[in-house]
Image (cartoon, rainbow, N blue to C red; front, side):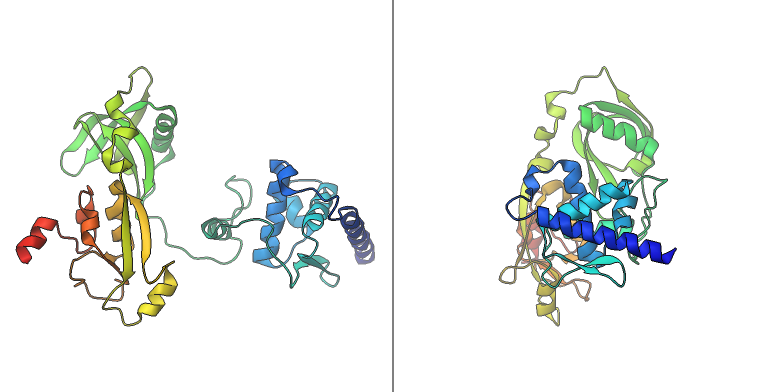
Length: 326
């Protein structure tokens, strides 16, 4: 009954307090001394306190499918490492972050947002719904796992693949490619690969692939490897600034990690056009594109010179065209 539950919870809290006394600053283990599994559990506790504002023993039990005693030890270990991070809420029978809370682990923002929006697990039989209410753009185009699996196996093992590919320009053709990497351009995924038919490096869309087969006995030549892909290996530096026509440039500076009004981005030449189009960066030399969607302007359009997909960047003009206009 409720009384029995409260008595057990109070005993648990006293046990936590005793464990904390045993884990004094002189005896508490350091993070580096812990196993990976222990760090994962403590990181989950840290995350739950930091971003959800409350922690129950059941949170650890459900996440790691551990016994109650194991969850108790995990919480006690966390308290030993960060005794000022949590307060016991006797009314709610749970822990809350204290006013002195400082995260014990680094929580990269993108990983935090992915966890909050997609849940803690990718296993189908484990609940992986959003941790808090979240909305994000629906993915309109995603490759099938039947296509994705042989491509990723080939990338991992350094193999070529044979496939049927549907191209806008040439229709359906049989190809042999050497895939090098997967790329998310913000709209869809594509595969960076060496095309044996055209004898050059290019991008392939996996949703247009069929009958993908890893070529186990076909050797990959030196000219087909990633270090020979100039566009992939070349890193270019782009300096983005608030658009000169934006009515509130100070707000744009708040939206991006700028230093002295400049947001410096390093990107592969092969991906520069995709990135600039995704962010709606005005790449015209005279910043002529209009609209609040163009919050950023590429300060030096010539920095895109030589990029294979620069032409898809908003407003970009090749240098020769710029000279004619002048």
